[in-house]
Image (cartoon, rainbow, N blue to C red; front, side, top):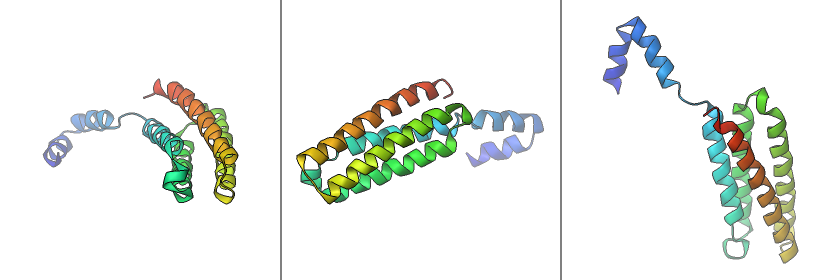
Length: 132
């Protein structure tokens, strides 16, 4: 790979073509993929078997991935990112309640919040796909 960069640097016309070809899809594409994966992970947490720490870790992963999406998304997606943030806030609240007072009801609320977030992330990913 280094040899290709040296050869391309030798010709200015090839250099501009190489840099254009190496830009790839927008960053929002990969950050959206990471968000989708983290949402699946939070939905798959088995709190009874894995403990509440696993739930907290999974929620933290979603928080980080959503932050990356918000940073990478353009103003074109601002309202959708706001909706994703609202969904995440609901998930975070439900998870906090479940960690503080684990019960069938609080864990069910986490599952419902994660499912709602997953649906909106999927819709967002479909919209972003056209730019990827």
